[in-house]
Amino acid sequence: MFPFVRVIWHVLKARRQPPFASLTETHISQHMCWPHDLDFWLELNNGRALSLYDIGRIAMAQRGGLIDVLRRKGWGLTMAGSSTRFRRRIHGFEKFEMRSRAVCWDDRFIYLEQSMWKTNGDCASHVLYRAAVTDKNGIIPPQRVLEAMGQEAASPEMPHWISEWCKTEELRPWPPMPDVMPNHP
Image 1 (tube, one colour):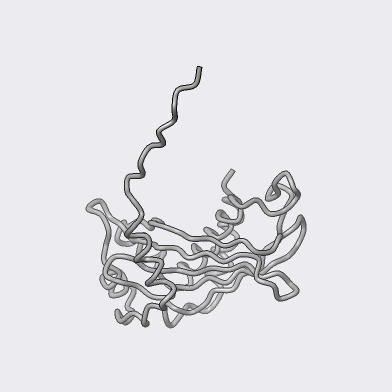
Image 2: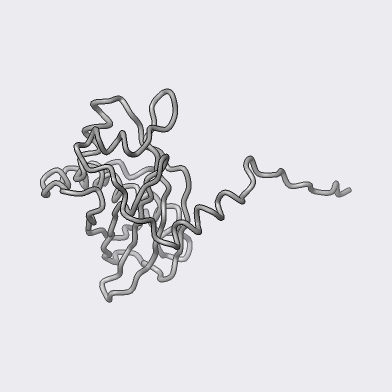
């Protein structure tokens, strides 16, 4: 089940924190791996990790003023792609810190990065998201979204690793080819 109570808790906490002056500021939040977050090996389930990243993004959007703009305009927020690295295990009842920020944007998407950090300073996981703000007609250009937020519309330079990921994503077939499995007796 999606962690709705956690989302509400973190959004309320974000509402009490200072708003961001810039979309690229980093939102830092504290979390704990609860028993219902665990997989069969008693560590943070990879699917739950992505749900927890949702919480960090929503709280970040709250501090950046995006949530108010989405409500006012009737817009939605969607993820159009992601790339995740898991490097260290997070076990039950282990505390960790999440860092969430917008890195840059192009004419269609906002690129977000998030990471989970163990108390010993090790990075447990890192994810890159390609996010889009949408309405009934499709994707709204980030420049228009930023203007609605009252922010400058010039993106920071896109890091090389993100631009290369974007190029690679363009090579990926869509829709994917269905697997052709031979018939077995």
